[in-house]
Amino acid sequence: MKNLSALIAGLVFGLGLVISGMADPAKVQNFLDVFGTWDPSLAFVMGGAIAVTLPGFRLVAQRGRPLFDERFRLPSRSDLDAPLLGGAALFGIGWGLGGFCPGPALTALPLAAPGTLIFVPAMFIGMWLAKNVPMMTRPSPGV
Image (cartoon, rainbow, N blue to C red):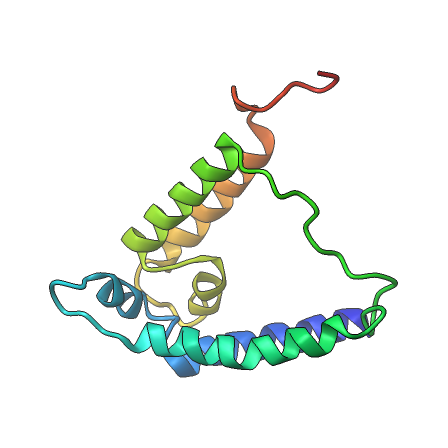
């Protein structure tokens, strides 16, 4: 049941991205082009998502546990370090240049949106590198 609910949530999310036009990288790039062909529709999509999500989070927070798991799995770290800030900067730069972030990129892949055949493999390579290539700023195990 847990996997089925995750599949349904992912399909609803993907459908929302397609309907709102957010699977089109030009929409995102035009939103970021405030001095050119600015398109405010992304702000309305984000505002609508927040308006739906906030009450949902409040309802879920009142529950003792999730429906399909034994406990809520929320982030426990609150510190900021160089890998987090560097990753956030790279994500933002990639999002601005490519017009995609992971969810819309995977949604746009079957739609054959321009750039997805380059962006998605590059995204997976970047994820693999982040997980498997040691960084100078990370503390070594046992320190």
